Amino acid sequence: MSSPATHAPLPISRFPVPELKDLPEDIRERILAVQEKSGFVPNVFLTLAHRPEEFRAFFAYHDALMEKESGLTKAEREMIVVATSGANRCPYCVVAHGAILRIRAKNPRVADQVAVNYRKAEITPRQRAMLDFAMKVATESHAIGDEDFATLRAAGFTDEDIWDIGAVAAFFALSNRMANMISMRPNDEFYLLGRLPKTA
Image (cartoon, rainbow, N blue to C red; front, top):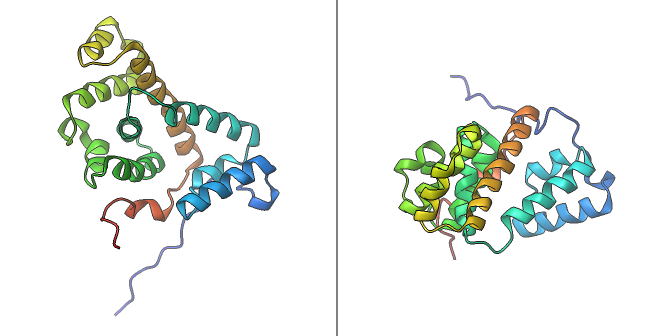
């Protein structure tokens, strides 16, 4: 009887991945801080470090969108990332941000639901309206009209919230395309995060 096939992990990028010791100090410090907080280094940090200037610009815009105070909760911003990344068929962003969404929403089911079909997910009507607009930004931004803004305002979003929804969707459309282009592999750690309650 043959033993089950074992698969060597795929490379994390089609492009060279620099060694941590060879990176500029500011980038190395950021990666080490993430490692200390998470317990591992998400592959996005290592793969994008191939281009240090672009790494800095990418994460500056990421932090401006995802870490600031906003009319959107952090979980809602992650919903946008997961839904639009599913539409753009980006495995890295669905898996990585799905893990973050499970943790921020405190719901082990919601990320998978949002990635596959947010219209049937355990979310509020307000969040469904938010994702309708985010998906339009990500996949058919040429078709956005005043009626889309009117729908969001009726759901209780301010114009600044609408900017945030659109900006998150647009930024991660860029991220999805970069991740797919370089074949960025999700870390194994992401698959289990937030699926089971923490044990004491």
